[in-house]
Length: 152
Image (cartoon, rainbow, N blue to C red; front, top):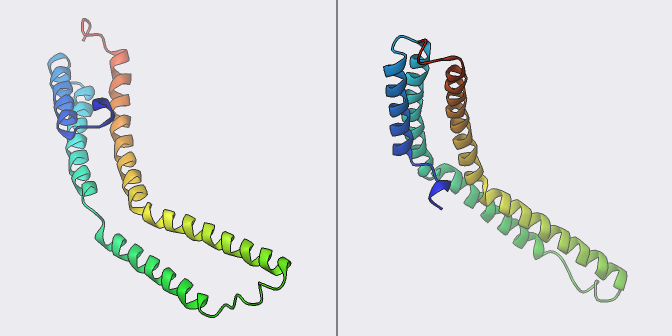
């Protein structure tokens, strides 16, 4: 699956080649300025991807602290509950079991949300950068619709 990943060096090379081709055909046009901006943006995107490759240490530490705190809280409150009264009445047992299942589900969803938080933050930042790149590429496409190399 080589086409599912974006290679920052190839993005920069493609942007530079596009700027060069536009510069040869339309040397004094505003389209060339847009292409130059695209090259600059591709360099910024490459720097941003290097930042995104590094882990967000403070967030990971915060997540570990929150998970440890939640585990200790569950453990602490678990020592107060008595399960002897649940053995006598089926209705109490079912209510207790339902509460246990609901708590386990909410804890699992919360744990999943915390564990995937860093990935979601990085994905959002990457998509924001790609959106700006796509916007400029779209502007270049729109300029090319109105340009005719023969007329100039």
